[in-house]
Length: 211
Ligand code: SAH
Image 1: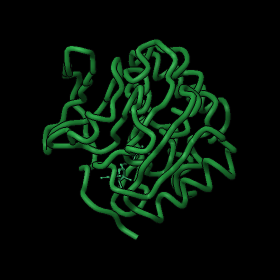
Image 2: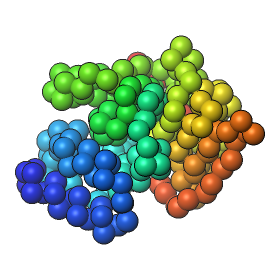
Image 3: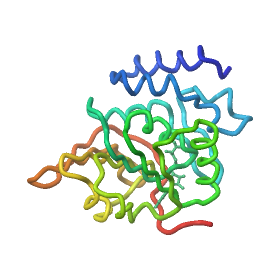
Image 4: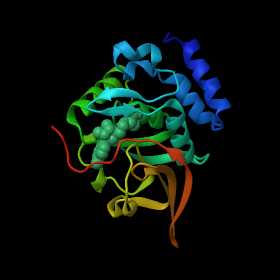
């Protein structure tokens, strides 16, 4: 149920769904997804839907993770990436295969602690740093970033995060409340341009932290 073959079927499905970036597909073929969910759900980890993580949060579906990484990469290598909403850490692990350095911020401390064990102790990923904090504030001490990926939906894009995007940088985020759209914001010398992509469903970006 959690074998290499199951993972390979997930990759084939992602191709059928339109994911074209081979680096993203390779990363998702390599990182086991079942270790990020509760043991009782492990056999469903490779199906194409979101699964509960506890604390009313969800691991994004494989398609959503693949699509966000593909958009963030735009076919090129990534340097420094910031993820807001570590959750179980799955997307951070995929990003770690695609970027030189990954920084991930999570507001719920126990979720972050579990993600830390998986990413650092189990998968031994050396290029991921995790921080307990309010992602609305970004990570000023490490900015600017080549890409910022939000795993929770904002009604308005926090200006602080836009400021932490490098020139030529890309932000991928779900925007809205009930009806949400996946958006790409690109920063150039002339300013920010926004492209609305497809409809999505994410938990809301919330203020503050939980111990
Ligand atoms: N990328 C994750 C998806 C997690 S779901 C994965 O692969 O599993 C979204 C996460 O965003 C939740 O864990 C939620 O607690 C977190 N979140 C919501 N608002 C936040 C904020 N302001 N700062 C940091 N994390 C936030």
